Length: 105
Image (cartoon, rainbow, N blue to C red; front, top):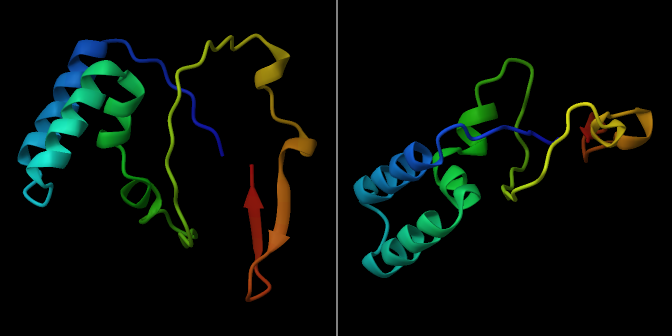
């Protein structure tokens, strides 16, 4: 699944990520400095510190989160481009260990 969003206020995004890092009591100081630098340099890193896939999908009715990974990258998005339209070839369906269907897009 892909999620495309536009960041309207990069400074606010960075500030929110820095605030989250500052209050994370479990983050070691050495990792905190690295995280702060990464967030200041790249808005996609800031977003990654603010969005937790488990929190995002964990409580969705009918969805059992089996695995979540997270990566971000800046892209030029043109909503009118056919490149951004999903069609049936973009979705792969398979079964998990229990035989339940798993859809990956």
